[in-house]
Each structure stands twice: as structure tokens, then as C-alpha cells.
Length: 333
Length: 165
Image (cartoon, rainbow over all chains, first blue to last red):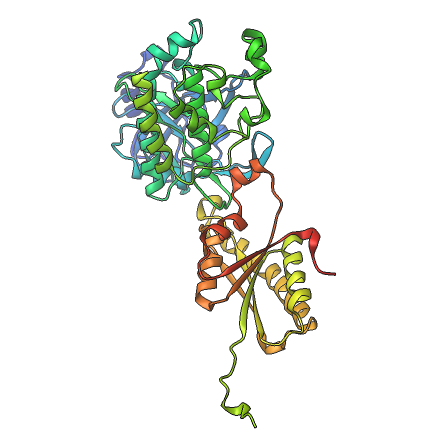
């Protein structure tokens, strides 16, 4: 007999059929006697471990809440983002439930309106289908018309983890690892340009939203549900995020005044206000002052994101053109 | 004796003032009122833009429409108040008009310039927000965009602190 949910609708599965499906992918001893079946995910906080969420007849066995941590803060659980097993094929998925979180985002000292928009993420998922540099998945409506996103799990490290000069001399990192990392990074800038040409933005470009897919060995952008309030140039937040990642991978980490103080105190006095990141005032953008072997063509890009700049990038094409030129200089260095 | 009737009629100089609810916009309006109010040969359009966030920022279309309607209501009051100021400053009633446009996810500057081209105003007046460099970088500057993109039109950027008393 089919299992019925609270409103009397059949979900297309019985407890037994769900157990049979689950037993293909997890140990029988770990299968609960009775599944709680959810088709309306509005109360995402109640969607819990071992529940089954059925979306468009496909059953997903819920595992843990996803977590996100940054800047040394403990990982915060994201109750609206669940890891899950697609019981139809055993693949690992990330299920993003609807959370219309509206908040004042902060970058440096500046605040702006931001909202998590399932609609935007759903639209972009459709746009980037089969694109190797974006997470893959599909939007599906639950029985309450919430736009749930079913995302393929990406095994691999974030850009923050693997583009790191930790434990080696910067010059060695810059000459051995960085050229290849830069090449991959340029590919991800091209991917963002693809979005911009379709009048879409990523909305939350940062180094932990760029994953190196261990299966394909390609970098993939993840999490594009952030939408911002009106702006004279809607692409500027993305451009700023791209600039920050570029400076991070060139430095092998964020080069702050603290880093200089601890490791290169002789350089500290040469740094002026103009050399700092235009938004993050503790980070140095003029990295050539710290690492003189950084080619000028690359450093000139960094300076577009410095306090001393008088010119900004208007669009991603401009950044990409400069990057391609700079990459030649890096490879030739 | 000169026959005045045979002289071609002079066309009014059309000035457009783009305003919002800010004090800087008010300063721009007052500048125009004080600077050319009472002189003959001018007409003015007071333009306001509803910079409507796109659909992504709202849970539903209805919520967005309500946001726009609320904004429209408050801006119409501002526009009428500013129209009266120009009339009191000496602009003929028939030569001051107001316009309200929804920008629909487009840069405010491009909507202003589109309207300027449409009405063929010879001068465009906006207030200066006086934002910091980081703010200009991250949120953009309408006045800078106007200066860079305006064609066949003078752009007056009014410093709030140097309005005409």
C-alpha cells in the first residue's frame, strides 16, 4: 500500500519500497524502522537525519545539515542545506531548501541589502547545466511550491585550501605552483563572464565558494543564491570577489600588515595607505612591494582593487583581458 | 521700425533635475530654483527614478509590486513638493513637469540619460552624494556615470553645501 502524507496524497512509495531502496546504499542496520516522509519542506528546521524528502516522486534520504565556517569561526550549521542520498541511484546530493533570509551583508566597513534567492539559484542552475566550472543540479518544487535545489555533491578542496603557500617560501610557491593555479583561475573568471553575459551574477564570490572537483580536476563555482539590492554596476561585487581571490592565490594567503609585522618587518614601513585593499583595509593589494618578482602586469591588476586606484574595472571582460596578458608575464618570468 | 512679429520664437531651454528623497537631491533642486528661477526662457522636468530591486530580492511578485507602489506613493509627494518650489521660485506653472520612472534592474544613470535624450534637455542636474572611495567602488556613483556617459547635454553636479540661499 502506498504511503499517504498528511493531506492524503500518495507519495508514490511505500515504507517497504523505501527501505528496499535505502538498503542498496546504506547498511541495513542503519535503516530506521519507519521513515518520516516529507513532501512540504517549508519548515526546513524540522527536516532531520533519516527523514525522507520526496521531490517530484524522487526520494532523498536526509543525512546531516551542511556547515560553513570562515575566518577562524567555528563552522555554523546551515539548517536549510542538507546532505542527502538520492535513493534512486545512491548518489550523494546537497538539498538546498527555501530560506528567504534577508539581511544586511557586510564587506569591510560597508553594508548592503542581501537576500537568499532560491529563484535566482534555480535560474542559474538551468543556465549552467553541463558547464564544467559550476556546481550541477536542478531545481524542483515541493508540494508547497518551494523551489528546492538538488545539487550534485562535489568531492574536493576549496580554493582557500589548495592555493596556499603554507610551509614553503613564497618565491618557490609563486614560481612552481602559482602559474598552474592562475591558469585554472582564469578559467573560472571566464565562467563568471559567461554568467555576466547572460545578465546574471554569482553574488557571493569568495575563495571557499570555489571547489576543485576531485573527479574532473576542474574548479567549480558553488552557491549562487545571493541577490543584492540595486547597484549602478550590478557586476561590481563579483569583480571585487574575483580580485580578492586573485590576490589571495598570488600571495598564497592574505598578505596583511600582521603578516608583514611577523615575517617581513623591514617591508612594513614601505607600505602606504594607497597600497591597501580598497575595502579590506588590513590586506595589502600592492603585492609587488612585498614580493618584487611579481610581474608588473599582474600587480597592475591588483592595484585596481587598492585604495590608491583611480580606475575601476567596469566589467569582467576588462579584467579577463588584463589577466590573460598577466598570465603570459607570469609564465615568462 | 522693427517688426517683432517676424522674429522667430525663441525655444525654452529645457533643464532636467533628477531627484530622490535625499537631502542632496533637495539641494540640487534648490540650486536650480535659486539660480534660474524667475528668468524667462526656461522649462524644467523633475525626474525621479524608482530603483526597483529585481524579482530575486522578493519572495513573490506581489511583494515586489507592493514595494514599488509604496515607493511611488512617497516619491509622488516629493515630486509635487519640488514642483511647487520651482513654481514659487518663478518658473511658470505650465513649464514645470514631473516624471516618475521605474528602473527595473538597470543602472539609475542609464535611465536618467535615456529620459534626458527623450525630452532633449540641454542640462541635467543632480545632487552629489559625497560618498567615500570604497563606497563609490562597491556601489557605483550615479553622478560619475552621468559625467562619463552624457552626450549633447551639460551635467551639473551640485555640492549640497553650496546651494543658493
